[in-house]
Length: 155
Ligand code: FES
Ligand code: FES
Image (tube, rainbow, N blue to C red; front, side, top):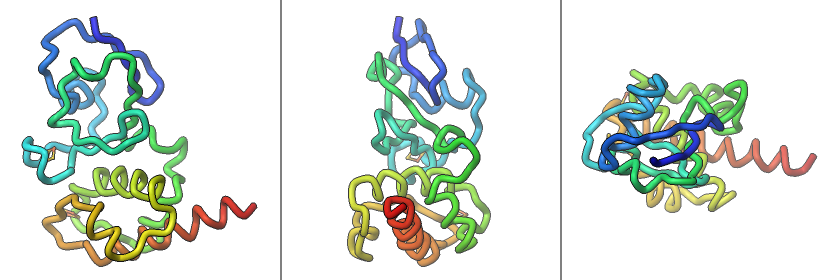
């Protein structure tokens, strides 16, 4: 039996340990914000946090999750008010929206690791693919989120 948490709720898995986390999130738990794109670890649409770090859930077998804590876009903040989410709204980043949950989860991890990233840092670490080409708005929103986090820290 593999036991872990998704957004704070206990999950028990006694099925195939090779099952990708993405399908547990979407089909078993019913959280549909985490998307399927390539299924090959390339696009990042399926990005979630595992113990606070961004991971591509299509490539993560459940067998690697025992005792770990998974956060999806639905659990990133209580009211959709994580600084990255606020910045995304302010800059009006999404176009079709399909890639955006993954983009936000990657950006939130990036800002945990580098509080004031340069454009080069963003280009290097924000590797999720957006077919709509919203990259320049994503970059702008990450800088804005860094400002918002800085303002919260100053309080
Ligand atoms: S669906 Fe996981 S990286 Fe594309
Ligand atoms: S907003 Fe459409 S794929 Fe990114």
